[in-house]
Image 1: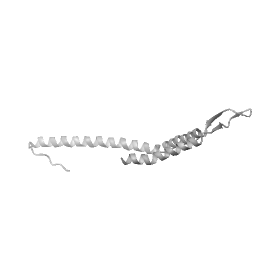
Image 2 (image 1 turned 180 degrees about the vertical axis):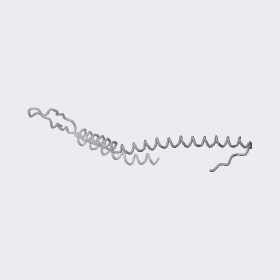
Image 3 (image 1 turned 135 degrees about the horizontal axis):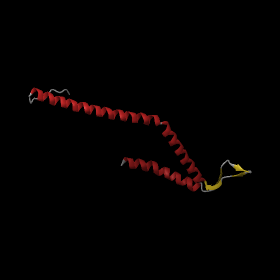
Image 4 (image 1 turned 135 degrees about the vertical axis):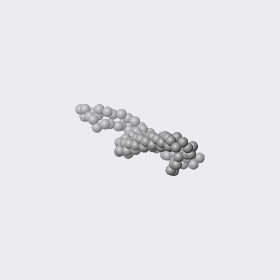
Length: 121
């Protein structure tokens, strides 16, 4: 319930602002890339200003996300190594536990008693 309320309190105002910006910035703008052949731009297109603004925001998010992903690679690598080590330790602990139970059973049959073997907790 709180998550839904927070979402409404944050996303609805952002949506209203985005829609207002899109409606207010509908005028077309010419976009050219700085590549020219014989004084004429190679790439020239006309788009509404809000489309250009949204495209730049999206492009910034993609570039930022990619940079963050690459910069955090060392942390993901160490997490994978720690997971492998924890798995190895778990298998080793299970092997020692099985060996201890096996030795306990051997000790019980060797003494001929039905008394449980002493175990440490």
